[in-house]
Amino acid sequence: MAIARGAGTEIIRSAHFEYVAANQTAQILIFGEQHHIYTVLSISLYNDQGTVGDTNTTLFTYIDGYDCTDGSNAEIFLFRTGTTMAHSTYMYNEKMSFNGHGPTDFAAGAGVDSIAKQNAIADQGGAVQKLMCKKGHNNDLWNISITYIDQNNA
Image 1 (tube, rainbow, N blue to C red):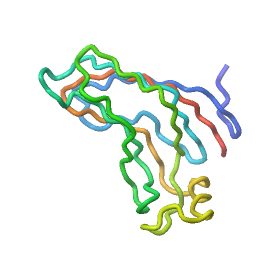
Image 2: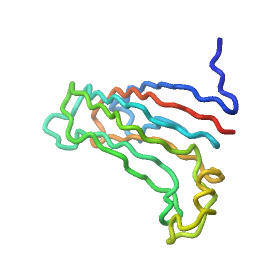
Image 3: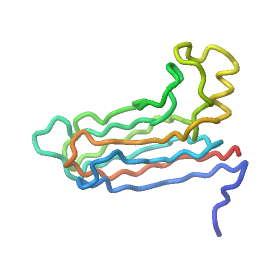
């Protein structure tokens, strides 16, 4: 039986990635959908192949989305693993949420200084937001597992 994903549902999802050395672009972990809220429960990051002697053997995790301070799309960094040697695991178990889309654009510079702007964020009328990661060194190989809650408020 398929998992119900319609309006008003909340489901637990998981995804797994082998972020190989040949892939030198940022890896999308969650591709946001409008009127969805994503709550990340855990991310397991295993460094299967680190670059020997390289202090950049790290992984950065960030939201590619709307910056409520200046009204633009930005990389909002959440954490980095720090130097993680080959065959080591980094666990991220802090809970965090983000919207599937950003707000309808509002004036830069003032930030969230009104109820209207705060509601615009909740209404998700802007561009898609994504949870992403990228390697500190292109030759590294990471295995990534993510578990999250997907709330559909459409």
